[in-house]
Length: 79
Image (cartoon, rainbow, N blue to C red; front, side, top):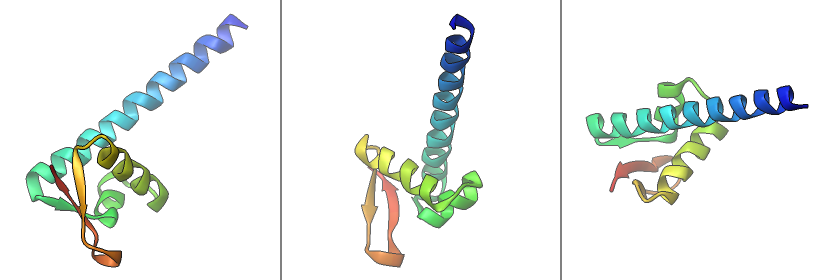
């Protein structure tokens, strides 16, 4: 129905806006402290490991940040 479609569109828009807000928060934290880890993202956004990985991967794919180090020592820095 048109109403349910409208609600779906609104929900998608809200989710996209929230995601962008979180990505912006990560970039702002990087500007302030220089580096951020997966754990840092989890604490900053009060989110899960999976969500932190998703956000960091998106930013890497967009070319805004780069991954440094290996294993537990991985940190992300602004390009």
